[in-house]
Every structure is written in C-alpha cells, then in structure tokens.
Amino acid sequence: MSGNCRFALDENRRVIDTVSVANSGKGYCHKGDPEDDKYLRERVLMVRLGEMIDKLLRPSGEEHEPFNEGRHSIWLPLLHTIRASHLNTFDPALSIEHRSGGKLKCQNEPPAQDFTSLALFRDDVECLLRDLYGDVESEALDSIVGAVFRIVKQFTKYVCPDLCKEHEDAEDLDYIFGIGRPEGYAISSGQWRDGMVAKRDLILRVYEVQQEPSAFSDYTIDFANRFSQQWDCSLNSVRGLVLCNLESSPDLRDRLQRSPALTRIFSNGII
Image 1 (cartoon, rainbow, N blue to C red):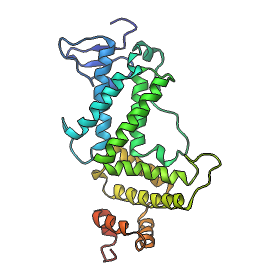
Image 2: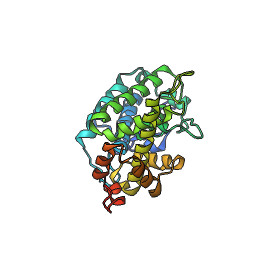
Image 3: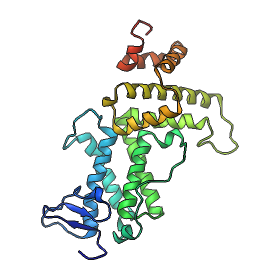
Image 4: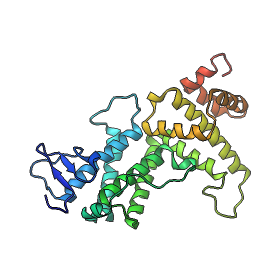
C-alpha cells in the first residue's frame, strides 16, 4: 500500500481504514471489484450510513435485522445522493491531510432543534462525511448534509411521523425564544400558542421515552435525555400539564389513550 492510500483489504477482503480504526472491518470488497481508495471509501460509507439509519429508525429493544425493507428504502436514496454529489469527486488523500476530530463544534446550551433525533442523525452523517472526505469547509459538504437532512425529514413525515413531529415541535418551541425568527419580527399570539403546545408535546414525548426506552431508537433516547436536562419532564410535571390542558385539547385525550406510559398515570379514570 502506498503512503498516500488510506484504505486497504485484509485477508478476508474486509476494508481496513488506516486513519479511523472505527471504520475498519465495516466494508467488504467482492472479488473482481475495484480496490482503489475511492471504491473502498464507498464500501465503508455504505455500511456506516446504514448503521446510522438503523440507529434512527430501529427501536433500541428490537433485535438487529440483516435486511429491513423500510430502512433500506431510505438508505438507498441517501447513498446515491452522496455518490452523485461533488463531494464524491474529492481525492481520498484529502481526508488524510485534513483529518477529522470526530466531533462537530456545538453550543454550550444548543436549542432543542439542534438535538432532536433527526438533528443527531444529521450531525453524525456530517461527522462521517468529514471523516471520509476530509474535514474542510466546502459548499459541497454543506449542500449534501442539507440534502440528506431534507430527504430524511420528508421520509419520516410519512413513515415515522413521530420523528418529524419531534423536530417540528422543537422548531416551534425555539421560535418563541427568538431562534429562527427574523430580527425585528414580533411573535404572534398564534405562534406563541404553537410554541407552548410544542413544549407540552415534547415533555410528554420525553416522559414516554424515559418510561419505555426499548420502544424508541437510540437517537430518540439521546434526545429525551438532553431535553430533560433543560425542561422538567418528571411525573408531576406531566400530570400538571395534562390536567391543565385536557379540557381545551381534545387531541390530548386521544394521545393519552394511545400511550401506555401516559395512560398509567391516569388509570384512576381521569381520562
């Protein structure tokens, strides 16, 4: 292997990454396939991207499946989007010269929309791309990360609506604190109401996740842990929110009846 090559194959034709040990053994190269750095990089990308989609969509208590049609249906367009991007023209040697630290810069107290399940997935994809293609600021990288996020968000809107709603609720909550609101713009009564409803629904979601973590994905569990550090998601908080909003929110009653964790709180007949 030449000094400026990043990837190699072991005796079992598994891809070895000489820069990021965590990637080693993740990809497999079939006999007769190309063995150049660009192709081997793509083999690693395929597997690592699949792992992240699994982490986003698979409940933590569910056994890993070698093939899941739903997850495959989002993995494939994301993979082809990255393949078709200008990012894929980058020489693998660039990732050796500009090595990634493995973490993105973040605020001390990031807004809720920056650590939703979808946002955590997006950040991990960006870290992966910076690792494989080079930790450099480029339009190509920003463009592809944005495209990946929009594709996944639209996908979850129809396939996993709770993930899409979680992110949109976080945006509505952040908006009433000025995040995402154009400078000089006032907030309307409707936007304030949307933000408060979003806050209520996020607290209820976090309580559900903490009560039944095996029913939710790893990214969602991470979101719940972070959100509960900023907001009170305790049993007493949830009970108070429900009692205050039950009469004025018919949709809340439906949600309580669909949620085992929330139904248990009011098993005495309130709902």
